[in-house]
Amino acid sequence: MEINAAALKEKRRMLWILGALVLLSIVFYMTIDVNLSNSKFLAFSMKLRTPKMVAMVVAAFAIGAASIVFQSVINNTIVTPCLLGMNSLYTLIHTVIYFFFGAASIFVVNAKASFLLDLVMMVVTATIIYGVLFKKTNYNILYILLIGTVLSSLFGSMQEAMIRVMDPNDYDNLLLTLVAGFDNINGEIIVLCIVLLLLVAFFLRKDIALLDVITLGKHQAINLGVDYDKCIRRMLIGVTIYIAIATAMVGPVSFLGLILSNLSRQLLKSYRHTYLILGASMIGMLSLVAGQILVEHVFTYAIPVSIFITLGGGIYFLFLLLSAKKG
Image (cartoon, rainbow, N blue to C red; front, side, top):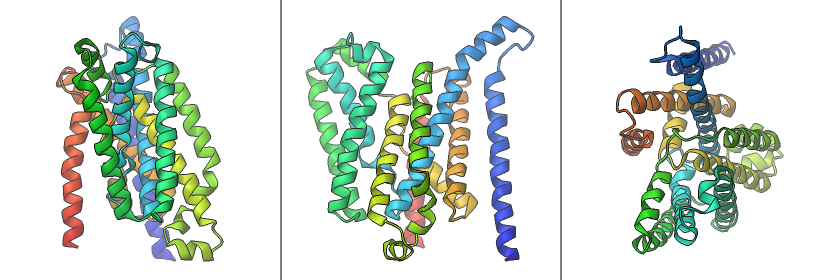
């Protein structure tokens, strides 16, 4: 009992340290290269940076929480929803809009309309995929990966076919929307994202509380009184909505969920999903803030933050595969 209490105390201490680092990184990002004695310049800087900062916090929470839940549901720690076609679906949706409606379409010019279309299309399509196909395959990880690979190839082929005959001007504008970034965040969209995330978290609060039991296995969970199939379906829908919100808000960020979830598991070494989700979210905030500082103050916007995440995530993914094979 004393060992468990000591371990629990250590995990909480680690979360407090992460929280303090997040606060320090936020303060540093908000004040770097800012003349604090000039009130007008300070107000202007805060106006520009606050939406970016809130977007990074929201995206980190959405991707971190969704990845932890998804991995626990399918009992595999090297797979995230973004590896199952979500990014390809996002790029296909935007390509279809530019191909059929052009760069002057309301779904391009109006940020709210663009966000809502992305969100609805991704949620509906991915819910069908996750809800129907996962159930048909009995949540077999090999089939899930195969389905994700096939869908990614399908969406990519459809996008490539449209790009080849697209107007060059529309294609140039399209490329800007397919790169994840925090430079043109709409404040009204952020508010809508936060509201949606909180609503989903509220409706799934009981299911999330059962994750510690669900990870014991299907038969054990059923024996303990969990309505396993319904609980899994609801959480998969929640994961889909979270990833769709994050992707629609900032664009596709490959491998970020993989990095956050596995670093949280390695750092906290806990089975409690409340701790893992908090850890993944705060690690995500630190990663995105650090990446954005590099983008703005080192590379002067020449390289998007998604490049750093994809590069680091790819290397980390290979490391996880080699470590698992060795073990």
